[in-house]
Image: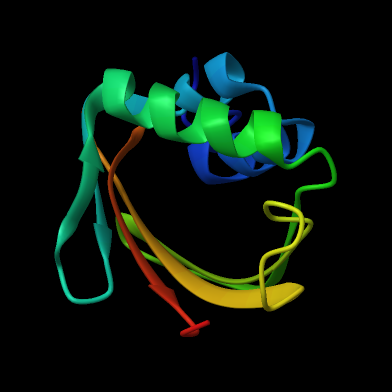
Amino acid sequence: MSAVNFDPVEGQLVAYNARDVEAFLANYTPDCVVEDGEGNRLMAGHAEMRERYRALFDGSPNLHCTVVHRTRVGDYVFDEESITGRLPGTQPQVRRAMAIYRIDAASGLICHVRFMRELS
């Protein structure tokens, strides 16, 4: 895939909104690390991500993420996000988050993510 034609951050967003876990994972390196805002590891690697996101996608039939603002700086992409439909019955109904994605220069895939979210 050409880096010019392939954007893993946009690709994972499209797959997230389609709740397609395999298409979602195709945008991440096999050893990708996902952390919370304080740097605590939430999950790492496709196996852990698959389990976590499959449960989220299966349990959230109306899940949808909208990018409010996206900024690119070198190998980093900063997305301000608005998320709705996450796990029916959870509060708040609309969640705001900031996701910081780091793109691996060699593969062109996302290799690290840090999520900052509102406390619920």
